[in-house]
Length: 383
Image 1 (cartoon, rainbow, N blue to C red):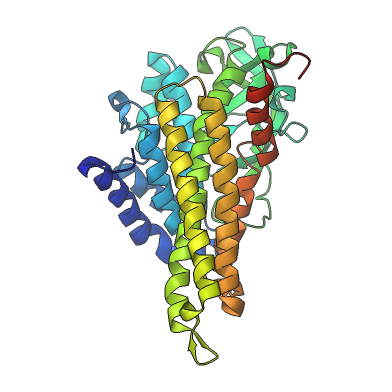
Image 2 (image 1 turned 60 degrees about the vertical axis):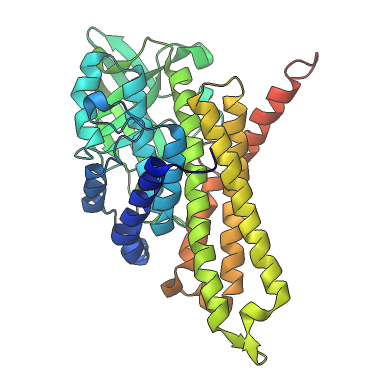
């Protein structure tokens, strides 16, 4: 797992080359202008990034989750925001591939894997974030359609995308009453709110999605009624790994900026890099990232193998890697001194982008709950 073969190195290197050529040179500008680079996303489809772990039958790359986390780490060295959106798109495409029937896969996957169409994952609501089973967006059966009413919050790509893979309530039975619909963005009755003003992730839009009597064909449902919560959670396992990889990649980029900066910057008559205290800090930063990367690869391998502890391992990796990534990026900014606070150096953008990774795909507090429940489930009286 820890020594890459020739094919694995080629996959990793292709992702890094894409990041270096198409993402890194523009990342600060996109952030400042709140520009969503759809043209670059189209280019990513041409190198297989639109369906990384979607089957090859409909244009996917057919790779493993282990390959995917290596890819997202490299993409995030160029821009964590754009890498994270590609992760969300891949999560939605995988859900269609994994749970859709042949007609659904044939209808949607070719456009998604080519990145000719963009997809968003829609679970969170204004009143249902961490408690996803409490969602209230309702889909009522009316002949061959569902009539959908409700709203979704914090939806990445909304307003610039083509499809939503959306979790809706079809029965009043808690988590068992949730279903998954694929809803085209141009569906009558579907509207989006203004682009949210955010701390980071400015190179992708984040909007509320409002549905008012929106008619969606029953044929657009993935799986059976009531399967939606399971589908959503299984999608999140991979999403958590990908966002953790984006944290590692963003922090790695920050660290790569820091060592040469300390070598060039003099203080008290010598390069800062000669200062042993700063060397120790660099060593700790690299160690934290290597530990995060190792746990991330371990969790990805467990997800590939459908291991019994895959859910807990994905939660552990997400919690550890997103915390470590933010702390390393923040330390890199500190080591740059006042220059780290300037936008042109790119450090403050990385810090702002990585902060949200500790919240989305399940907050890190929820990740601790997932791990703790797996440890205490067999003990009587513990809930």
